[in-house]
Length: 176
Image (cartoon, rainbow, N blue to C red; front, side, top):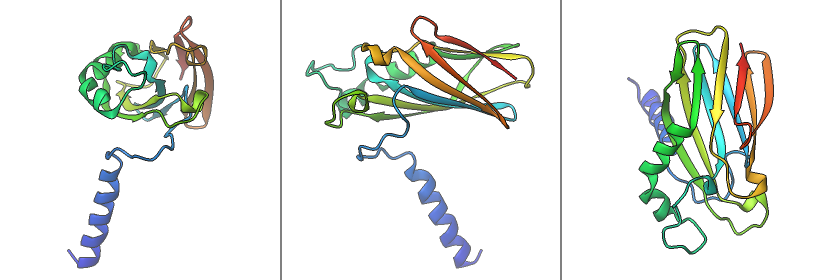
C-alpha cells in the first residue's frame, strides 16, 4: 500500500473515531424535541434529541444540573431505559435497537428550550423485510410542557412523513 493511501486511510479512521469522542462544544447535534427515522433498505436509522429530565435519578448530588460524571455513572441505567421505552415493531414483532450511541448536551448557560439539557440518541433497527406497517413507540418525555412532545420526520426514499408524538399519544404507524 502506498504512503498516500496509508495517509488517507489513517485520516479517514481518525475522522470516524472522532465521531465517538465527546465534544465540549455547546452546539447541539439535533434540535431539542426532534427526531428522524430514515429507512434505507432493511434498516431504520434513528436519531432523537430527548430531554434529560425524562430519565429519573440522574442528578445524584441534587444541585439541579446533570454533570458528565453523573451522566456516565448512570449510563447503564440510561441505556436500559432507552431500550425499554423506544421500540419499533414490524409484522414479525419487536426489533432490537442496535449500535446505540448517546451524546449528552448538558446545560449550556442559556434559558429556554435550547438551554435545556438534551440527550441525542442514535441507533438502528434491522427489519426482516420491508412490507406492511411499522409501529414506532417513544415513551421518554420530560417534565416541562415543551418536553411533552416530539417532532419525528420519517424518510424512505422519496417518501416523507412528519408526526408529532406526545406523552399522551406516544405511538405512530409508519406506512411503507
